[in-house]
Length: 195
Image (tube, rainbow, N blue to C red; front, side, top):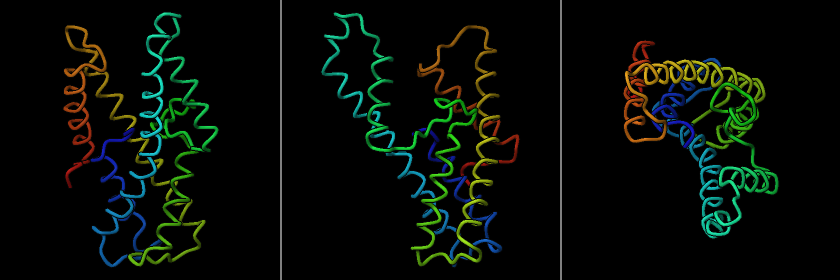
């Protein structure tokens, strides 16, 4: 998933904390945070499943692509773009669309619509303001949290690049270091993903 589950849990807890009691009302903040995390994870999983589908499709043509000298990355991008257009999926990755954050502005807006719709249907919540005002506040809160996350990610990547030897991104060592430095940078900002 584009965002770590722990970060999605953190974001959902922050949404509940920042929106109650002036924007929404809930009887149980923990259940509410879990509900919002579920909405976010379900939506982000759509693109993950699409990526898996593209990989499966390309695995059937790997010999042909190797023989013809076709770039795997280029074919992946083309097929994924075609499926995104056909299925009317909002692209999650902001970096693919030129946004600095991990989620595109379009995806944040799409998520805000889905969250407000889910909040309105749930018995756990009561909206205290106009649904569109709540949605706009959701966009603001999520954008702020993602901007913070982007700074943390950049700092973790800088720490990895500052190692004495080069560590290739995507390797197990890189992933372990990134996870460790990422958590350290979050703690510097007072963010504990486990709380």
